[in-house]
Amino acid sequence: QKEVEQDPGPLSVPEGAIVSLNCTYSNSAFQYFMWYRQYSRKGPELLMYTYSSGNKEDGRFTAQVDKSSKYISLFIRDSQPSDSATYLCAMSASGGGADGLTFGKGTHLIIQP
Amino acid sequence: DTGVSQDPRHKITKRGQNVTFRCDPISEHNRLYWYRQTLGQGPEFLTYFQNEAQLEKSRLLSDRFSAERPKGSFSTLEIQRTEQGDSAMYLCASRYALASNEQYFGPGTRLTVT
Image (tube, rainbow over all chains, first blue to last red; front, side):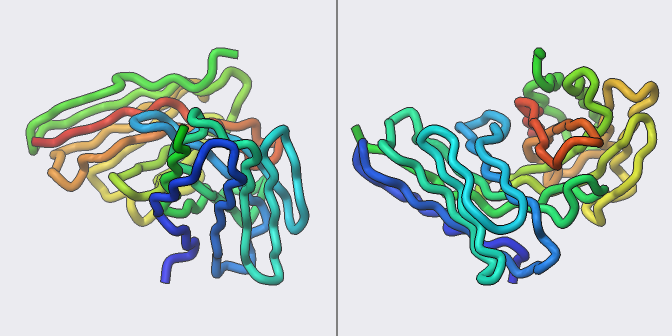
């Protein structure tokens, strides 16, 4: 079992829909959680950063972390065709520490116009 | 803020050749990370620097791989005696050590070993 599990999709939704993306993890030491967006053949772009459990909202994006269930989610409201990309969850055990990020495989999202 | 830059963007090499990639982090970011990403997978951590010191290496970093950050600014990643399995996207990320672990990635160098 990998440390971070993420459904690779593809997930196809119509424009304007609410998108729900999620990851599960097994390492209870993880406490810093990130979501990245990656377009084809580009580097990952940081979308959301959350520490420990709770919600964080930024524009059309909401990130949720439930450490008790080892489950994190990203919601995208009013989805646009430009949101079509691969969404990667990433996490680490120490925010100021030495370790690199552990990523999920990424979910390929397609927003149909 | 010009972001993280990487050079070259794409490298094609023959098996057995050596290759070197360069990463320029965001200025004032003293931590620099290297990752490798293969098709359909998320990035995997390889190594990281704080200033010029290499502080952690993943078990993925075989002895054919070496990374340097001689003056604590740009970094290079060299792969010696390349193998077809080295074909991947090599990503560089940076952050400021005293900030949270939000890492900012460059565009990557795509390596193809023929």
